[in-house]
Length: 297
Image 1 (cartoon, rainbow, N blue to C red):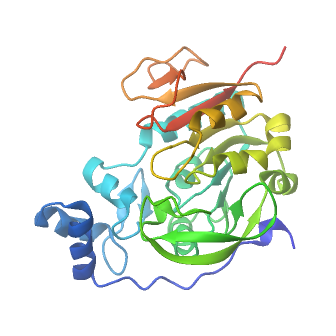
Image 2: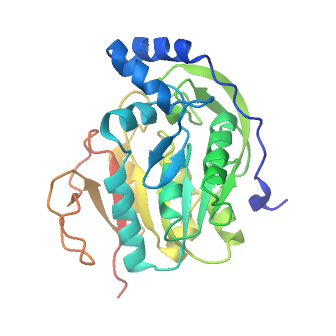
């Protein structure tokens, strides 16, 4: 079976009653009652979807993404735009691979400039991803695959957290685990071999398993040299060696930058004042990394 056949229809998620969700949000966030009540309109199940950047989006009830969206009106908007601009400047027309797509915010935004392949192994989260793609009529721009990425192919254990943003191939203890399931896994090298063209942007958000994903993308990184956006976070039991992870990627001929809002950026492809600064050492509060391929020769 082709890896691109791992698109699957998942039954719609039955949401909890809004009041129970709001109560849970209050306990988890310790926010005022009026804020948790306002959050209800961002939750699925007959409630008003979130309208973001021209997209209609359903978020996971009580998730970190939903909380950030409620407070700030967006989610990683600057990072999304930086990645899009870097990819457009270096590799116009290439596709994007989104590993750990969650409900698809990054994929939706990038679909305006590229074809996107979105990987999300958690069944309920995948159903929301598919629903968001379909709600915006983007089935021809975003290919959704219910599969994980790692250093080998096969079935693997997957830990589904109460907040899907912290679900992973291991228990990071960042959020309580709701269940342990088995999901299919592939390597990015195997996936890339089935794509119609080279990859221009690769996003990796896998809650501590970054080195495993990179190990399975050796040929892809050497051949396509895509721009990388990688979340690297060392706290809890996430990534045990953030600086080692950065070094692994630098060895492929990349320069590393971190996102720091309001910081001036080295002038690279006319991307000035973007908030990127050259990497010096890992700091957990600057967890979004951008890796830009060095010129060859």
